[in-house]
Image 1: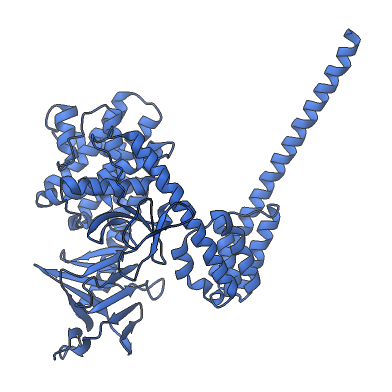
Image 2 (image 1 turned 60 degrees about the vertical axis):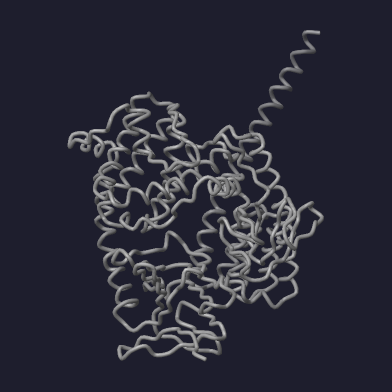
Length: 561
């Protein structure tokens, strides 16, 4: 028996060693293949940027071969773009049909708008692919709405003392298809046990927001926000709940683009990031408390310097900050501290902070106060002032901001680096404002007065520039749609800058209760369309364009009978 066991043991050891060696070789090979894949993808992208689309497509194919015929979804999509631009139609569709089935890629809005794919739209495969995407969106909408409902039913009002789930939630697709778990006006039940309907243009707007439909208020969630672990659905449903208790201001806080205010806000971001990192790494309470105090020092300096904005600032922070906190805290994301840090990083990157700041600060302070077991939730009819809560509930006294305390905070929160970066940004931004002021104020322009009934459909909150406090230039995506059944001038869409090195935009000039939309010249007229270098306006029938003055300004006016 003993002589029998020993050879068997040796065989086992030999087998295990061989298996280990095989796994080591496989892992080593995969690592090499992954590295090669990454190198080839970079080369493919370089060719794409150089407009050498055929070379780019071939390089993407090399990358997929290097990874055993596999590829990441975004890389497949980019490969399709390169092949389409090279007019290699079959190759482009091959890549798209690798990612569209089974719901790997469902961004219908991007597919429909991406000019890289224009060469494909006339082929029957295009409609087949779009149908696949629509089917996946419908399936995903059903799954994600039910998932969010389960989360909120499990919460059962524990977070805010009120149930957040509401049947008035719609998933809105770029093609005007709308999906809901419950019946809404004009809808019918489909095979995924969802109610759906194809709505006419401009009934709803393709944006995450609270919107009115058939006399009811709905949380509207874009279909391309369904893959975020229920965060956006919960975020918008929280707004529905908020509205039942208090209507809050969501306007931009213009002073946050002032250079000193922006620097203080960045320092506050850094202190919050350090505080969240310290919590995530289980550091001692003093370290966590010191970083929280640093954030409040910067906040108090900033808000003391600009007291007239405090009411508006705390309202938008209550509106969007608490919704963002609620969406993420109740979502199925695993590490909420890392998520809060990433949210700060995301909101810190843009050149403007006037509205997006609240999404980062509200989430961060909520997470930190929860960790410190501060009794900070004061109900849904309250405007939240995080500094007041900190002083009253945690510090138990007013925060005294001394030069020494500010200096200590600066030492802990990268003041020198942030100050240098903001000084350089100030110079860049002043050049940008000078160019925008020249284009949209000093030179001849095209303008139209916007009444209060006009609804702006979509804009990029990270692409705004405040000029002279009352004027806001929108330098990236900005769409507007007439919500007055034809009483206003029409609709417009602003795409992007003419060239990467050129700056342009659309301006909204506000004076008391009057807003004026201002477009740069030149433009051309084609029927009822006014087409500029970066924008297109569609006029309603009873509106026209006429010269305004000797300077060369034009304006859109209503036709007189």
